[in-house]
Amino acid sequence: MWTGATNGIIEFGNAQRQASKGLRDASSKQAQETKNQTETMISTVNAKLKKKVMETTLLVKQLQQSHDTLSAETKRLGECREAVDLELKQLQKPLRKCMNGAAVRTERPARENIVDSVHLALGTETTDLHTSIAEMTQWRERCDRLLDGIDKVSQLMREDIEDKHAALQVDQECINLHTTLVSPPKTARPVGVGTPRRQPIVPGAAEGPNGITKSAKAPAKWKESSTVMMVRAKEVLNQSLDLRASIEVALKRVRDTTQKNSTQSKEMLRKKVQTTSFLHHKLSKQCIELNDEIERLRAQRERFELELEDKAVPLEMVSIRLEKRKTRPAREQVRDEVEEALEEEYQKLVKAIRSLRDKLSNIDAEIGRLTKVSEAVLLDIDDKGRALSLDKQCLDIQSLKSESVSVGYPSSAATPQQHKALLSGTLSEASRLDTVNNNTPTVQRINTAPSLPVLKPGTPRIITHSSRGIPQGCA
Image (cartoon, rainbow, N blue to C red; front, side, top):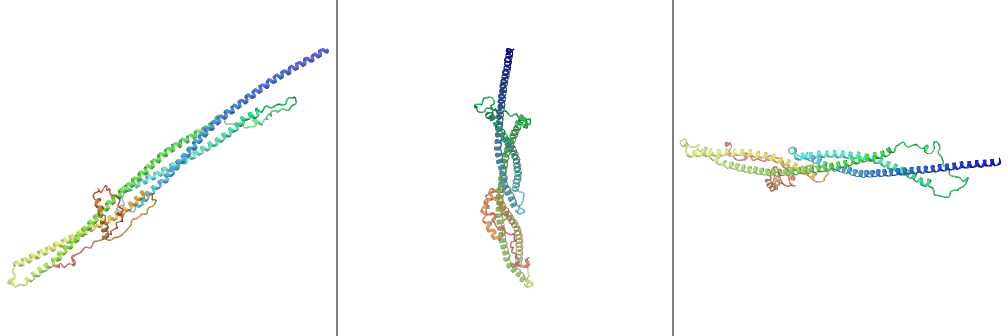
């Protein structure tokens, strides 16, 4: 019995030892499996973290490149917008020139204020300038709208890049935890029963991962939002490229049109000035010739009056002789040769006097007609001079870079002798201009033409024969 009890105890101890060994083996196996599972999970998480970091880094790089490209395009579009704004300011100068020139030309005399080629050229230039200004204003507004859109996209991209940088930092810190926590430096661990060990803290129901709000955004949505942003950036980039190309074409067209219209207006003004100068000198020459002809008519009239005066004595003498011969005795009053000769002489003298008086009347009428023509020519010369001066002012406005030009024509008064003397000085030039066709004059600008004084029209002094000693009986 005593041996049986002891053997029973030994068998029970062996059974318990075998059970303990099985428990230890099972625990060791479970621990190894748990360790392997933990290492696998950690490796998986680390691999996914590294993959996420790589994806985020690549996405940040793409976003940054897109943002940099958009920033560079924003700068170029801003420069393009400044070019449009500068062109708008430049267009104001020729517009002011056209308006000033048109205002100057409105002061032309009524007979010269016609719708000529200069008027049409200035009107075309003004219309095109207004059209160009309106077009440039629209381009500037489109630039402003697109710049606002680019700024919004750039702001969103900057915010996305900042968020992704922050996410990268968090994910990198998560990766670094494997080094600091999972793989601590290997030091001698205390061995023995009762030695304190580090125990894992299991979070409660609302603690740790259980207490963290789960992300609602799917990975595809996360990448899609950035991709959509880059697509939008590419769209506005293409819009900016197209807009800059269109503006470049518009700027070239506007500059070419402005230059063409300006050149055409100046060319029309030069032709107008040349034509007016040519006509002004032709009129001046004609005025001198008319005045010379009037003087010759007056001289001829003076000679006719002298001839009338010379015939007064012979007519008086033949009249006295005829009267005296009537006192002869009755038997002596015969129609002899003397009486016939006296009567013939009297008739011829009367006929000559009447002929001279008719010629004097014709000369007076011709002097009056030529005087009216001369007055009309002088008025036309004055109008041409005023129009020439104003057209030259308009040409100066178009040619010179002047902002404002005084408008006006110097009025002056001079005697006919002074006017004739000044006009005589231009005869050599007028003679040269006679060889030029009236429609296409090729004369140069003559600076002295506008300075010719204006001759006030007046009626020339006509000498009548009332003061001459002509017998009243011959009227």
